[in-house]
Length: 636
Ligand code: DMJ
Image 1 (cartoon, rainbow, N blue to C red):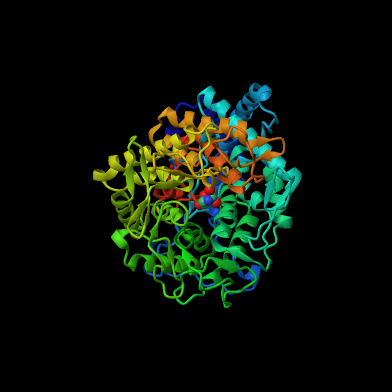
Image 2 (tube, rainbow, N blue to C red):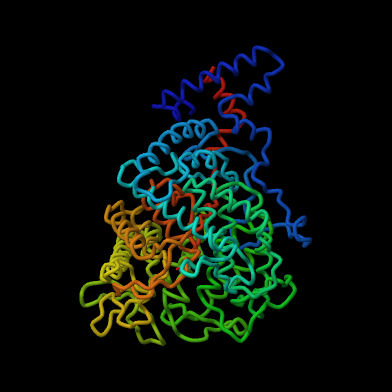
């Protein structure tokens, strides 16, 4: 087993032998035999045999907010919480990165990082910390149910020089966006680059630092170590959750809870888990409605017995109530408190049993009656991430959540049948549906669907696989056309396919570009699924357009009219630009095993959450005392 793992790595073997000699020497000294195990190359594995509770599962919210914590119990409908965690530690051999391998990679990587950085020095405006990636990624990633969630070997460094250079450029853009935010808007939610101050709208109910939370994981995976440390320290010292405003349940969940969870899973830093759980608990009053369908607005000052904030007569939005599942499953996973899963499973059950016109999900429902409020269907604004979270719930459950799977494919079939259209010029698009009448327009937001349909294609059954892959590729192509048909090479907020329009925006008020990620998101997924180089080239086109039209001296800004040569900026560096747009571009130019799709799902704000693997059999074998003994004998 060990030798299989080491095949072809001479230097690794050499290093192992020297440690082995230390090991034998210590054994020889006698009395230190047990201690010698700790010097053995695979120290972390051996330590786990004697110290099994390394996954932080004893975390208790009692100490945090004084509220009692229910012990997690089987609730019958969701298999994720029915199986007890394995009690033997270990790494999944397929992806494992032992402490030794990490060190080995560090030294290789330190050199290669330094080299790339030096080569690139003349091309970037701000030099990034060349060695940074080494120090932060050497920490152990968090284990979920005893499975390790790996980052990937060699930090996803691409093998070809062109992609390396492109990736470095994305990293430089991230550093520039971060530095600009830090300089003019530190601690505020978002940067206003023209007025050089912060944007502190009330979406987050008084919570601050949205750009910091949204950036944590991006900084981390890019190896921007100093910037990540600044962000972490701000969370430790300045992220105050005792605010009293009314916040968007959806936005706080996807950006703050998702960002904190992701930072925790990547870094293992307890502070992120503690804050995520504390904030998650503050969202629970939103569910205090007669149906349990949450209201869109929650008063963050409330406790779980109080009514939600906002006006209960207002509709709940499909995308908002349907975009909680991934984060809430992880909140239950971390706290061993089933309340979060119960809340989102109730939503799902409710939506599942409602009558649907032609199998389609309307975008608004009443949180009191639980009925649809109108028959407007869209996979753009108001609907989008509901569908995304169905397929991602299935994937994140290690493909066991059959209910989510069925709901996703049924919904997709209805969309395909009723909404998918082909323009006279041959472009595939997903129209909107207003009470049975098609509106031939697509939101920029709907461009995420190329990637979503792509990642779902694999699991829909052999008969539909190719069709879904083609649909994903065709939608992504259309979104590329929406960009390509503007002089700025940036896509408008809405593009139409009526009155002679073909993926263009005839209406002046639909021509803005807000630094949105959906198109590069689909490029990233389609690249990983097909390895067609055009997706990397299309991503590079977007990057060049961002540099040319959105970058100003004080940060990045959206533009008001993508069809105008006279660029006017909208004065906002959206936090999702740092969380999503730049992260997806970075991943597009990285190797596929950086946050592999086998092991991670991205929430709708691009925060990676680990797949909750059920089967770590191989690692159990690896660390079982008998297996260990065999390995020791093999080495001796
Ligand atoms: C992000 O906050 C999320 O991607 C959300 O799902 C939709 N809107 C923005 C990005 O456009």
